[in-house]
Structure formats: C-alpha cells, structure tokens
Image (cartoon, rainbow, N blue to C red; front, side, top):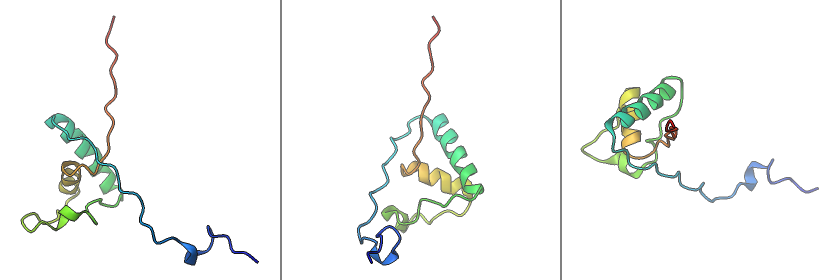
Length: 92
C-alpha cells in the first residue's frame, strides 16, 4: 500500500517556502498612512504580524513594536505589505 505524500506529514520536504515578494517603496506619506491603516485593521482583527523571521527585526536600536498601528507602520516601512493602487480613469 502506497501512502499519498499529500496526506503523510512525514513526507514533507525540507525545503523552505519561497520568500515573500517585497512591495515597492512608498514615497507618498498619504499612501503610506492608508496602507498602514488598512494593515493595522487586519492586525486588530487577528492577522499575524509579518515582522517575525525578518532578518532586520533584530536591529539592536529598533525594538519590535507592540501596538497594531506601530507594527503595521514597521511592516510597510520594511516592504512586507503588498498593496495595489487603483488606476483612475481620466474624464473625456
């Protein structure tokens, strides 16, 4: 009898998942605030922070934040939050 590798937890490969893509740098402070606010809302509703496992999270001069808003701002600053800017149609 052959065991399906999808159902056998011992058959998991030792390869790591592909790295999460980085978001483009946000140069507009208004876009930064909007993206961070939406991410903070996700964190308050139970989403897991993305700062864990980030090599820059162990910077000695920058401790990991605890409030959802600060966590969201740090995630956006590090490019860990992907976002889409909708294209607006020009009249005429």
